[in-house]
Length: 357
Image (cartoon, rainbow, N blue to C red):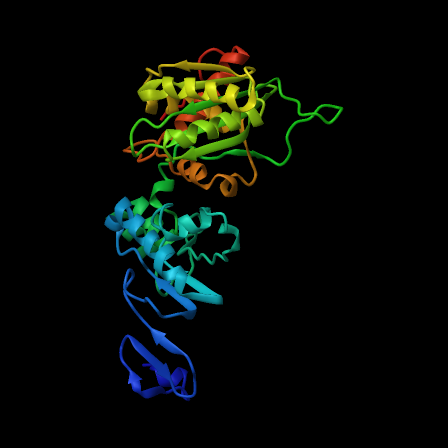
């Protein structure tokens, strides 16, 4: 059996400084601190911070409260301990798109991370495994049968479970906006759709899109849980700045008052009545509308290539929306579906394409 000193024969733990959770090596100035995820590390800086397997099992992976607590500990405690020039290493099974790695990769700085991913099964068709001595094809298939394909894919293939049930399988993106021969933006119309916050836990989502040859180019998104006294002037500024011609605002749960205040602010702040504001009661089932409009969203709406960095809250809500089960947030898909419906109405396409599930 190989032991520690066989691999590092000259390395010795410093006498008197060899506690299980806080120790150092002879001849070095570094200390090594170990604590459980969520533990106390206040007042201790580090040049390298390593997080190993913060999620214990699938029960934790599907618990939003646990995932939120882990994210809060990372941002409020762990991150503040990393000294200038320090390194972070996170080793974990990818259970959910909302786990620690998922949130970091979807953040504004997601591109700064180096991702090293190794799947246990390299090719199912050829039954080729990464390390057959540790996990053979036969054992791998047995584990899949005894658990479930989704759990096995998370454990061995690093595919978050919620990816399997995502409504939107892909999104089209653009690098440049369409322009005419003179170099001016070539939109037949610029529209907006706003889903006001229904309850205290909901977000306001207001989207501006330009229509070009029957397709919608997403130009701007406001998605926030701030109160109406802040979102009303924000929405008015958005409509004015992007020269919106028609703005549709859902009048459910205070939306009518919101629409009237936005219309008033457009005149008071910008002296314009050029925006046609339409408020209406949305009586259709929200999830049914989102499901029905999904095909059009994927095929005919285009998002900026850097939309994950521009609007991280909106992006996260769109890429994580599930076909079945309860979705914690549906404001982003709802407003996006509203843009899709508005485009189809203007283009005379009639009813939405049907998304069969």
